Length: 195
Ligand code: GTP
Ligand code: MG
Image (cartoon, rainbow, N blue to C red):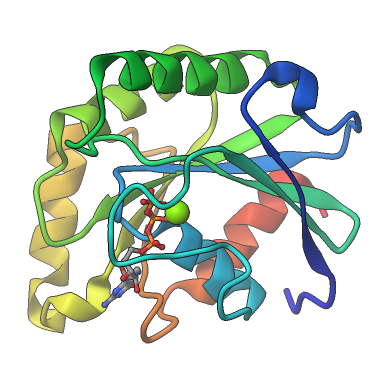
């Protein structure tokens, strides 16, 4: 998809702040610094519409982006960021859980995992959570440019094994640097959006 219009609608914390429309949504989930905001920018061909940072913890709110007036990307704050207090973490958990379990227009969650490492405990928990609530998952393995091509298959198998990956879900090897996986990601997203 070639995107002409993309804009942030709102940075929300509370359910009352979610946009009051029923257009479909695709949310991004993953560890802090895994490349969620970069993924959005790559798909939209924008440099920094979704703010990125080399420091983890950049995205702190649910950021709703309206794309072509037809759907929302929802950028979600990352988990696993060490420098966060217990209270902050609990608030974060509540915010994500409320959104993921109560937002009826949510069509799928893109679960991003760093292709270089074994999924963290939280990556596995997120995947299990989404499966439990029957929310369709697209696993995107990010930063593929950081490992040699010859190791892609091995890393993909390792990630799938750790997640107890459901063969009906999509798995996409991706890089915001090289744009690898961009077209595949769009076609899977469009299918979920029924565009
Ligand atoms: P939070 O908002 O903190 O949860 O992080 P995020 O998941 O949104 O990560 P973000 O997109 O801000 O990217 C974090 C860092 O990783 C930035 O320095 C990006 O440039 C870098 N990065 C993201 N994707 C890729 C990729 O595919 N390849 C490489 N080499 N670097 C990437
Ligand atoms: Mg971010």
